[in-house]
Length: 117
Image (cartoon, rainbow, N blue to C red; front, side, top):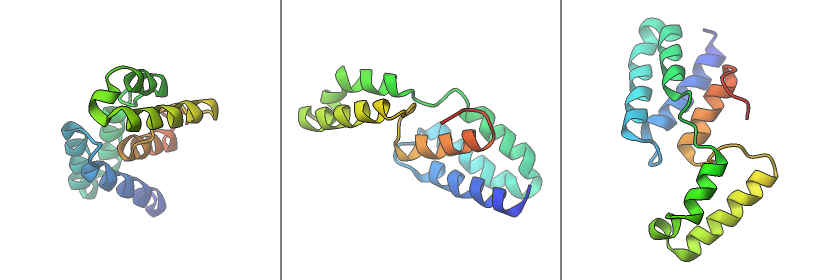
C-alpha cells in the first residue's frame, strides 16, 4: 500500500479508535488494524473494511431516531435542532450520519469503493 493511502487509512482508524460516537466493537476493530498494519497492511485493511461495511447509519434512520426517541436522549430543543439539520443534509444529498465515527468510516469505505457518499 502506498504511503499516502496508508496515512489516509491510519488517520481514520485513529479517529475510529477514539471517537466517543464509535461503538466499542468499532474501536476494537480500528485498534486491531493499527496493531496489524505493520505486519500485513493489506489484510488488516480488508478486515477493517469488511467490519465497517453495512454499519453505516443511513440518514433516514437517523432522522427517524431524532423524530422518535431522540428527545429522550438529547432533550427536546437539541433533538429538534439536530432533526432540522439532518433533514437539510438529506435535501442536500447527505446519505449517512455525520458524526465523527460515521464520517471516518464512510470516508474509508468510499475511498475503497465500498459505498458512495
